[in-house]
Amino acid sequence: MSIKDLASAVNAVLPQQLGEDLRKNVRSVVRSGFENMELVSREELEVQEQVLLKTRKKLEQLQEHVVLLEARLDALESINP
Image 1: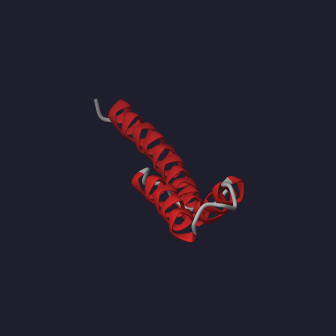
Image 2: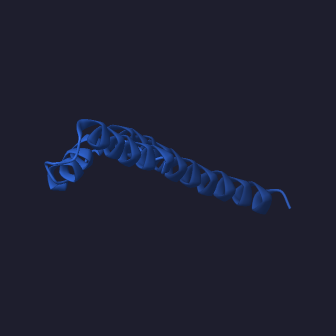
């Protein structure tokens, strides 16, 4: 649910007798509250998930490379003690 959706939902449950100024103030308070929470958008989250997946894949490749290099080093050390 977006901030706009939440503000609309709050606005919908407020009594119709409330003045437009009060409605605007309620929307502003709700929006401000969410902005202070430092939430991220769905798009930002998906971008970070992709970055994390790429980073994880690269880390796995580097770990495999280290294992191969250690095996080579062990083999060389066994030949030349």
